[in-house]
Image 1 (tube, rainbow, N blue to C red):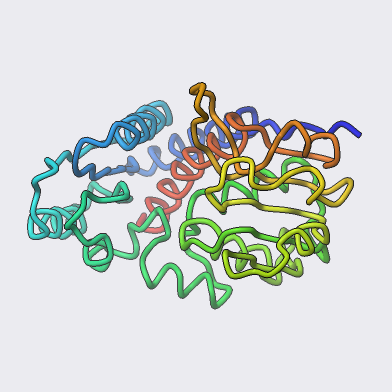
Image 2 (tube, rainbow, N blue to C red):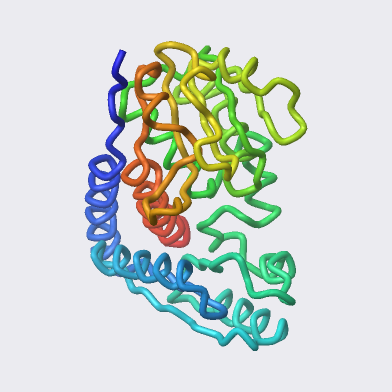
Length: 286
């Protein structure tokens, strides 16, 4: 068996086109969605990521601002900026790029984020609404995974889903999202983590396997149920500089029915869904 490749680039392109049409329609009502990104420090990966988001926002017809603070910024400076953006009516979505430099508390800064502008779905209010089955803003990567599954024709309802990794950015929210009683969810979900005994036993039961553990090539073909859909969230660089996922693509693609590549799978969806959430935030305020 050779797995079908789930093309995240193509699906993300469609999402961005839909967002651009939504931005145009909102503009007819006199509202231009505005995205403000806060970048603290000089981490190269964070800088590249924020630049890609800024480019995507402008391409969709949104206003976009990047607020840069040095690596020596104080907690008071970060907190003050979060309060200022929360009170700015031109800003509909606020993105605090994580992680923050050592010595700064992301939790303290996120506590000051206006939940109605929390397009990354990281505040306690956003997490609570998702847990209650009343999501307002879902974290962008889990939301992108859901769209990937839907767009690829993967049956989620009544499926066995196994999620490997329990971070608040991906693992926990996707486990909740896919278990909700909804047309695009309603799955039976198992959440695995570093304390799971016999991980392979669980992953082999999965009709849909979502891997976000941060372990390059940690999931191999012999750990996958034949015909399963595999969503690889991980991304890291190998010794040769090539990008690697958390799934060993060479062996997994010979067993799975469908699989996301790295790069070109989940990554493009994260930025696309950030644009979608920003449009939603602006629409809700309008």
